[in-house]
Length: 163
Image 1 (cartoon, rainbow, N blue to C red):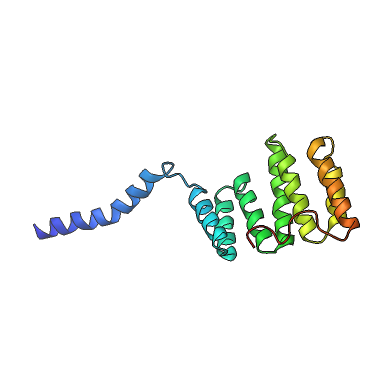
Image 2 (image 1 turned 180 degrees about the horizontal axis):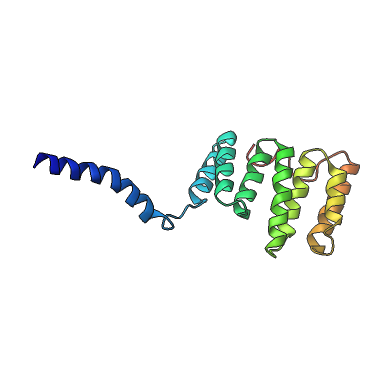
């Protein structure tokens, strides 16, 4: 009798993990939400490197989630990593356009990062390319950037809010 129990127990130990994995296939949904939540907490606390790690983990789960790109763009900007923020912002614009979403808010933030990076002329040229898509906001921002540049000032508040 002990051999039967031992055989049964050994079989259960070997088969149960396989059954659980097989049963779980297709049922477990992996979400970016926990990573986005942690990213936002770390961002508020000024723990930018940890926030960036969470954002990258979220992108591994869903590389087309505009919310993740938007959050990462913000973190990189707050961390003063403008080159990385611009790369993320460019990818975000591609995704937003491909989904047919309005671009006006996204282009304004892209221009803001360009100005933070000391590239006011490029920010103006970039915005000019969207004058038809966002006539109200682009015109005001371009005029503000030009005026600020002529005075040797910044148009957008600096340092970025939260820094």
